[in-house]
Amino acid sequence: MIPTERVFREQMNTLGAWVLSIAAGCCSCSPAVGCPGPSFEQTIIFNHVPTDVDAQVIAEVTIVDIMPENLRPGTTVLDAQVENVIKGQIRRGMLKIVAPLGDCSRGYRVGTHGFVAGELRSDVNGNSELVAISENVRKANAQPR
Image 1 (spheres, rainbow, N blue to C red):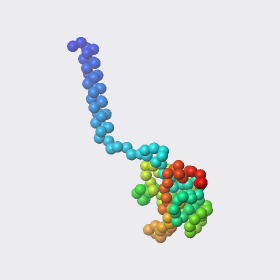
Image 2 (tube, one colour):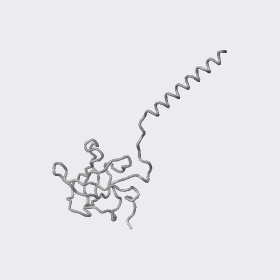
Image 3 (cartoon, rainbow, N blue to C red):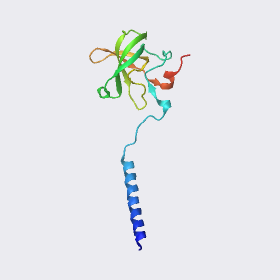
Image 4 (cartoon, rainbow, N blue to C red):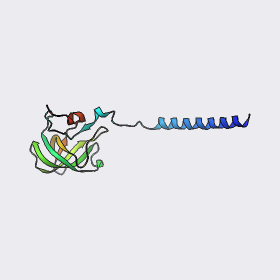
């Protein structure tokens, strides 16, 4: 065997081992989860007063704080300033909003302003909180008819 054949064979063996290692690593990893696409994105913030949502409360709010996600698995807890009450019996001022959290959740940032809709309930300490309705982002951004 001439020296170039030996070098070529060693390189091919190394390449084969490298490809096999990557293939084994890819197969052993758990599948990645994520939102399948923009049409699946959900939000609790409506750009306009929602007219086609059955909700106990509708309020215009500005998000002022986001609490750590580990407090309630599967949800995000937001503190919001109530600017205007459209429907329901809530006071102006601070309101705790409980929003569903998932791979397609979007729009929960400090400073976000818009309308939220949902159901009022009491937390474990007896404080009022709004359990927000999550809607498709396109529907939430659509102009009412």
